[in-house]
Length: 148
Image (spheres, helix red, strand yellow):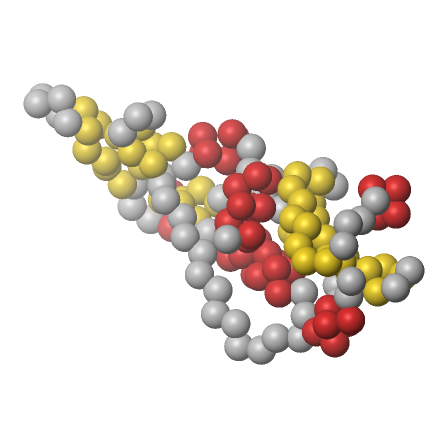
């Protein structure tokens, strides 16, 4: 849930426009499933990096919407690998987890460090360095001046 919300918050309308085939009728719908094989902390960070890499390697076929005589919209696909467009990942965030242990902060914590943490904050950052989403989970509050 946190991953979906943070990714959605980070995406701008340019991303959604690039997935549109014919406004109001057809669009690409992308899904990213993650299978966790091992865990040693910073799960959202690892999954966000894997999702970013998968999306960066995603090539969407070029298509042309065609309206039939009956008014229905059909999609014509262009053939060939050269007729694909790479998905723009410039606004897809990478997550960075920050935990507080006592008076210290740890970035990208291990599982044992997460277990000792009294507060956790996950921040979504785009490749341009823009903070686009945050997720505060468990523990006590964190003052913004302590995090910056």
